Amino acid sequence: MFDMVSESAGGVDGGLQLISLAEQPRPPADLALSFAEMRQRVEQLDAFYRGVMQRGTDYDLIPGTPKPTLLQPGAQLLDAIFGLAPIFEELSGSVEDFEQGFFAYKIRCKLVVKATGQTAAEAIGSCNSKENRYRWRDARRRCPECAAETITKGRAEFGGGWICWKETGGCGAKYRDGDEAIEGQAVGKVENDDPYTLANTILKMSQKRAHIAATLNATGASRIFTQDIEDMAPVPVAVRMTVEQALETGDLKPVELPDAALAGLGRTALVRLARALKAECDALELTDLPKLGPKPTDDEIRAVVREVRDRVARERERRAGEASA
Image (cartoon, rainbow, N blue to C red; front, side, top):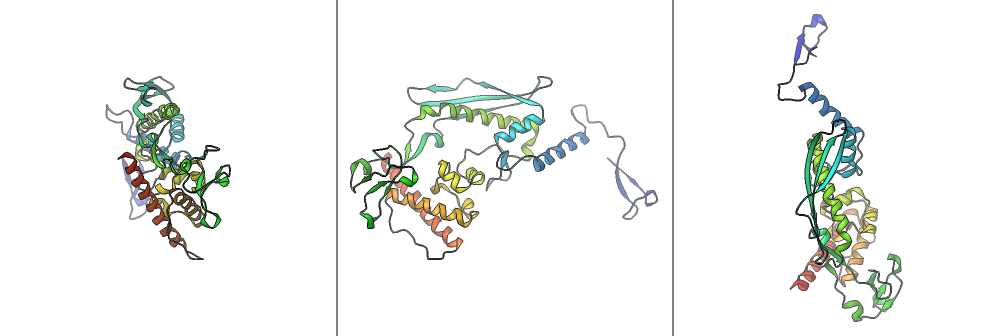
């Protein structure tokens, strides 16, 4: 695809210079684009990724994955520049069982070229209410007065007992140690008792999975991105949100924070995380926790956070095992 000219024609480096041929070779009959057109499209896609798409909105960099993860806004953006429109179709095999509280959707996303109406690509996505993120919830002690899950253990120097903590949205009610209304509640990983409110969420997730897969197929962007895995909490949330935001929304559970994300947190986020884990320990009545000195380093805080996180995780697993036995 290149010609060579001599130094007398203006070349350098030993008399040789590469220049593009004036006429590009035609592609074989079974190729829709010439090699030059293919190369140009790839370069344009790379430039669009680097110069236009935004991390945290259109894609995320997820620790432990080899490529950036394409998010739904990024898929919509790629559809727009390629002139594509998604059409969704619910397939046979979808289930809406309001008696048993089970929901499962299988969706086909077909991407059509707006200019011609031709199908560029299609993909199938599915989601159901038995997936871990929908089947289970993290139950905490609920206040009998205000119904908020804001009960925490009272400090011994103030009489112990249980408090509905106002700082986390509670009403301030107090309960004595041994109160069955508080201590008789199931805590930790429990089955979601209200799956019916999730039906639309599960439908949207199946549509999103199908849409992103179809976009990767239609645009050839899978050489840059991997399939959307943002529902593999909590790592994507830890990347896109601050720890404080993720903890406040409930999208990030301190006990589930992986070492890869923990290693990248700054001091302020580490302190917030340590406080959140302390609240977890209070709710589980865990004592004899490791202590930090007056001026701990970031690595010392990380070590303590890691130890407490693992202890909380083990305690939750133990209680879940006892509940299911």
